[in-house]
Amino acid sequence: MGYRSTWGRYVSVAERKQNAGRTVEKMKKKGQAANPVVINGREIARSFWGKAWCQNLEAYSDFANRLPRGRTYVRNGSVIDLQVSPGQVKALVMGSSLYTVKIEIQALATARWKTVLDHCSGQIDSLVELLQGKFSKGVMEVITSPERGLFPVPSHISMNCSCPDWATMCKHVAAVLYGVGARLDEQPELFFQLRKVDHLELLTAASAASLNVSGNQSKKIIQSGDLSGLFGIDLGDAAEGGAELGAKVKGKSETVAKTGVRGAKSRAKKAATKVATRVKKVAKSTLRVTKKKPVKRPKKG
Ligand SMILES: [Zn+2]
Image (cartoon, rainbow, N blue to C red):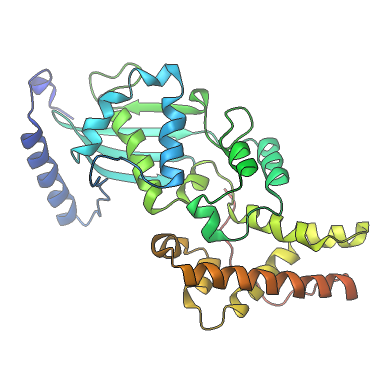
């Protein structure tokens, strides 16, 4: 970055904020949209996924000593840009100068994901409940278990920062790790992007289990993915007039997660029940699900 001469100089919070503001302005002028982490109040994360993300990191002694330095940083608005893509977090952090942080998270092992799907089968009613983290105790235990759950252990996380202080975990990286927790409050589905799994499969598993079908043929059909397609379409149809739900099924889950409206939730539940009944009929009568039309689903990975 060419600011090595400033290394070691104390930079006040006010100065850092000013520098952060200037950098964001410069980025805007260049047409780069910065996505800063904004923390309101003392709590870094308030939602289930945000809190669970932070608690998971704090649970490891490798991290516990170094993480606290990041709390002040992220609260002060030093993380001026944070972008999450599958398996990766890229961020810009304003310290004594501007640093680039890159964090890579290993994809969740397929076997582990399958085990989680098995355990959660039929237990998560709707996408809203999934994204809000409203689970039964059993599901909660599976999801948050360090041995068999969804959260990364330190060996799954590789970190890098452009600062001269970089050794294992500097305060910039720590701030970004907390920043991810804060971001999950707004966009919980990003958690699944980081682990490179499709969160909708947790719901598909639920609908498939509720069918209670017997026989290999029907099983085969269900696993082929047609059923999930049917689920997607019918869920949208059933929620006719419920624009939020339609949008939700197409993957625009943020809106619903943000609003978290009771109406949307109950509509989703009703729609899911309707779909389950309809799907049962289809499975019983023909055991053959004809593809209606291609359904847009978020790509896996
Ligand atoms: Zn650093």
